Image 1 (spheres, helix red, strand yellow):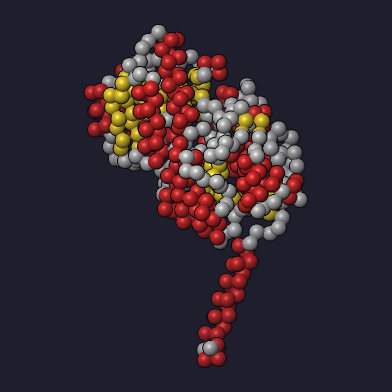
Image 2: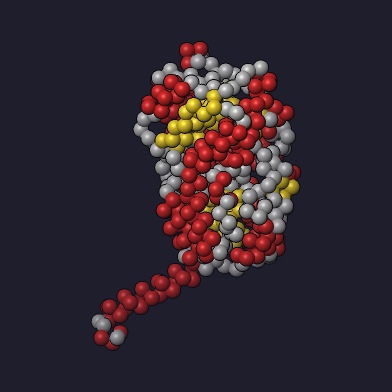
Length: 426
């Protein structure tokens, strides 16, 4: 067949064949390297989350691939000792917050980049589709920051989550309401739920509605809306009319900013806001809203004011600030660092890059509390792949800074209640 081609055509075909061969060779990681595929939103309205995640993963790679005098997993030696000092490398992809892109990129990372495990992906909806690919092919997928409870209720064998889910967080939120009633000698009777309509917000709202009923609170407003909506005037109008004692928002960053601005414009004054993390702990929300969001409470698994109890926090924070342009660690990057180190530790303990060996090591994980930045009792996975050592805290914005306010024994500040009205804020 080549004989019938012109000399130029035959040469082009040969070059194409060589190029394909070269791509195939490059796609196979060398024996002294472990490659992890990382999926995050690097563009779009939540890009800062992905940028922070990438920066803190670079901190983790420094800790893993070089020697450090830190009481963190894999810090003592350079590389993975049980794999002959193999270095860890990441391939980062941008899923833009879109489940279909996350699914396609997961497929490409496994089949073309030949990664040994997947890590990501912040949005619960993206984590859902991307981890389906890993489950079908049989590659470990570790998630550090998606909170939909349903993710660990799918019967998956290759999916592991290190962070609390919204069931854990919501339980703490309702425990807080009961304890605050006693502390402030008040009685909350009604709650309102405001949630964006992706898997994160929908699952969170479902859990909160069930817990409100269980704890005897009357649900007077349940308002789902499309994430990224240009206006929340109608929803806030309905909240003003319903006047819930406690508002429970589950919304991402841009929605949280729009909600705060619209509430001010329409003079909506909730007496207590207890948010389901997400947009409320994004440093972008704090820097843009500052005192405008005074009094907002959010659940979180991490706070900088825990540094007195966790000496690792200021050390890792300085490493992070060198890569982040001076930004401090916050909730998501702290969780990402923890989850990534758990995955790398499992690969090292497996002593192998084979998926089944890594899966077995993840199931056998037993990381103690003193090796964590988080206020958890440790990392141990149950049969569903959920970490059973998680613990949640609540933080409140006071003077433009978040402080731990619950559990009360960990609190750095007393709870500000009720939230000052717009007219009384300075």
